[in-house]
Image 1 (cartoon, helix red, strand yellow):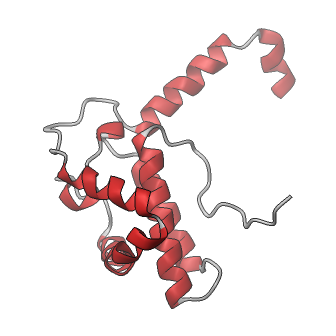
Image 2 (spheres, rainbow, N blue to C red):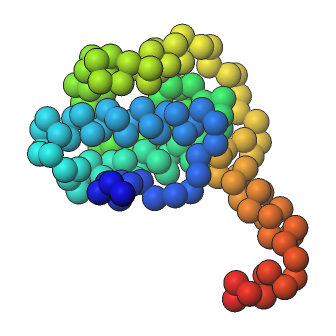
Length: 148
């Protein structure tokens, strides 16, 4: 059994490409934090990761999300956006050495065209809640009573 630190980002589950994007952001933040703040993830970087996770979960583009840099919807608050730029400018070049597959996937994603308009209820959050509701409906009544 390995001693791994708990994940810096809480669950809800991100679907498809959003999960890959979260892994990319996590890798970038870990590189930045380790080189600037110390060997363990600091509170401000953990807070940023939590914020980025929430933004990914609620992105109106859902799994068709363009990279944040080319997205026409600016959903990050100004201070988080500035921190994101700082982290990515520092970590981006280092990603090619430490996480080459994630880095190349991200570079390819930046070349994809931006979808014109997000569909209604396309966000990961809407899909996740719909799946949870469907799973709850599909549970046997006995199972639902056991959870209470």
